[in-house]
Image (cartoon, rainbow, N blue to C red; front, side, top):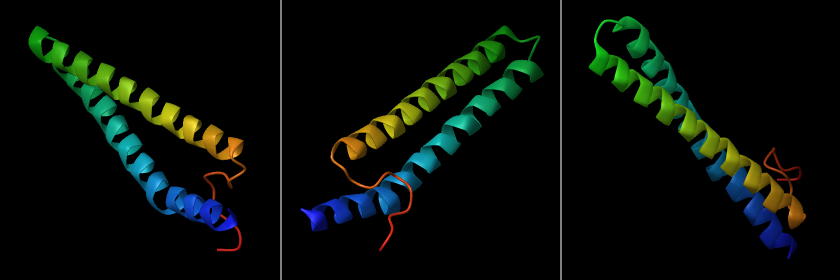
Length: 90
C-alpha cells in the first residue's frame, strides 16, 4: 500500500499539478483578454458581448480548476496520501 500511495503522490506532483497550473493560466489569460476586449470596444455592442462572454468563461474555468484542486487535496487527505505539495523521500 505504501508503494501505491507514493506512486499516486508522484503522479499528482509530476502530472496533475502542472496540468492544473497550465489550465489555470489559460483561464486567467482568457479572463484578462475578455476584460481588454470589453473595455477597448466600448462603442461596439457585439465586441462588448464577446468580451463579456470571455470574462464569464474565464471565471467559470477558474472556479472549476480550483474546485478540482480542492477535491484532489481532499481525496488525498482522506486516503492519507501526501498532499499535492512535494513528497518527501522521493
